[in-house]
Image 1: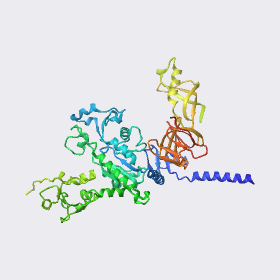
Image 2: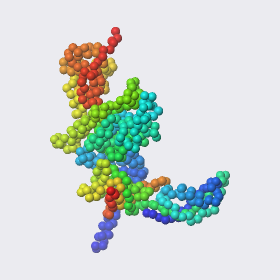
Image 3: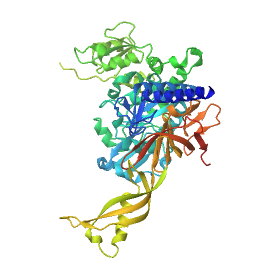
Image 4: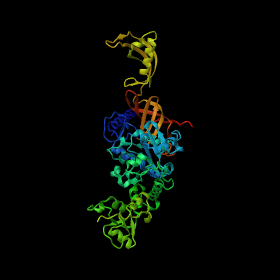
Length: 391
Length: 175
């Protein structure tokens, strides 16, 4: 009787095991094999995570499961996610053959690749490039790593991305299995958080280019471009001498990275604020980002003059929207509550009104500066010139 | 598992090698061509241990190359489904960990890691039990069971599990 019972339970166990195998939902496939049951799977569905392993694909359920689990883990460590762009955000690279005569002196100033922690200018012969790291980048990464789990996300190729990661993170501590390159994007010319194993509500992005993040505008902190080399300046249409040609560089202590680090610390602090009471899992870093942004130009009421093309719908203009995101109120008509007139020509009617009524008259760059520096800038630094009017 | 088997292969030799050292050159070429390769049937060829027999050479029409059928003994390594292996952890991330047992790479996903082990990120990512008594990190030795294999021309890739009894960490990385 006992033997019979034992045999029956063994059979049940075997049957359960084989049913489990047949019922495996194949949450992910690596090297053609299911990660859960080991069977060969030909499925090409799901999202490819080539940056973790060249043959890894994960189904949507599995991605959601990993995101949830990882998020809980990170919250316990009081961290959020930070996605970092490379070019013009953390560094600037140029091809060796694009170096101008005034930049030749740089060739002898490069630091040894074997000692990346000591320098900021590197020559990568096999990629035929010179790379300059942005001032403050090492301190930035060190401090940000205490508050964020970081990813690199570049539109460059994988080989380039891995070399840059080695320069920024020689001990492979920050970006292990987290370097996403052009080939990992699921949509051409678009970066997406679908390949990042983190909840969208907890990701902040630092990038100098806005158009590639169409789907995740609310997570993006736009960085001022770092153009060290002459080729980089030319690429963006600037005719002036580059930082390298002027033998100068961005300030370490109050450059873009130092500024944005303070903002990140502020957002992090607000997100993990104990006094808010509700569950951390329900909070959204995008809302915090929006709130912090709205403080920058709070209390300002703006009117624009000769900034938008005629017949252009003002509310749709990029500057209008930027000002509103920064917390300013924008209108088209003058009234006593207007605080600033934003103009490109000091000779317009609205500009004259501002001077007469002792309101601020500023160049549109004042709004852009506030956007990059996260602080209202002194209005006197953005004067408006009088342009010759056409009579 | 390792096997010591006899395999046969047709070796082509260029006439410039003909001479006193023909047999040695043939054996050298065999070693260069075969050691380190994989096949689905035999697995990974680790080393050639001896030549059993070299057959008569056959001159190919039109080229002058000569084909010799060679029978040789070699040690092969082939993992099997259900086999239990010891491996060294090479990389740990939030998906699971990668380990190597000789020429074979094995991936153990977090589905097949015991539920009481949590992933800890940091400069030395690892999986640890809640009381901290067991830790899997880079260079740890683990005993795992193979549940799936795939072989191609240059490498063998396996899926493994440590969720069964007696599997898991054997020893910690040497300090």
